[in-house]
Image 1 (cartoon, rainbow, N blue to C red):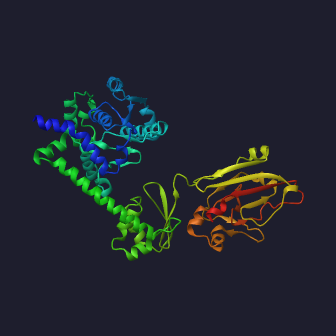
Image 2 (image 1 turned 45 degrees about the vertical axis):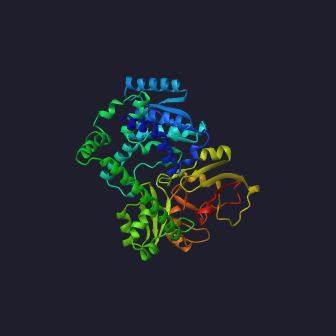
Length: 467
């Protein structure tokens, strides 16, 4: 027994070192890198802190106080402060307004705490010039995550468990079990605090930890270890899958990001599954089956889980922006500012466009053929609001030099605009009248007159980038 315990004391640092080498973190094993240590005061974070010291790092402890457990939260902060002082470790602490975050975002308690914690870690890593930020996730956490994700229903991305490294975040203790961590602390004579909520079965993860896993171990001894091995095997296969998908993605994706879905469906043995992985699961398989059934249709949009729109246009699947950035309502230009200052710049949401409206003296008026400019009599401003919006069904305009009006859809067809270009086209109105299609057509409304001392000039900057 003594030898076994001694081996467990001596082995964590060596085991962690080897695990880091095997998982692309070997660059942190030379010199004395400054590494942030997420330090709650629990067993895993205290093991992580002292393992960091043993590895020769210059650890910077990072403690988050969410204030959700009253005196216990204060106890944890005091404990971490004392432990870091004894170990001679630099400590940074922060208190979060979790309720405020939840009201602002609608997140659950768990999601709000996670977001606040990782946002602060990212920020302080930049400020303190940390090489990485280490969290205390261990092997049992990985097993719990695997079970949670598989119970919810997942593919290889969810079943691969917790990644050893993601961006600046590393998890060196994934090679250790909770039992090994506790025994290490016991034999080293290191104290830790316990979060009382870990014993509550109100949370899904705690039910797995306190009820399901013990039952599995009782019926199938060693189940946790084998589940951990399964997650590692799936993670290995997932890495291969991602490499193969990236090769296919390069073959079927144009430089502008459009994906040749028709060619994928024609050539590949599992085309729907491949398209699903190329899109990284943003469109569900049901949506991809709809695309398959209507592959030669034009003008159909599908919205992904991320909010990104995908336009299906005769076999091509074209990413078409984020729903949050599309201009969903008319944008009104501040005419009072235009009149008082003589000009106004207005950013157009979603299109990387800026409308520059200004009043210029007749002496500075030099009309030219440039689809990014339009000129009108300043009296046009008396006709109503100057607005920018997206095209609407039934919109009409009276093009300059023509009698009568035409549907915008016909003007778009004459201009050979693709479905995506039609979707991105902006429409400038004065009151209810369409007066300009930037980059395409001017209307014959409100022409400049010889008696006009000033002229209203509209300039859509960067409009040519989307046409």
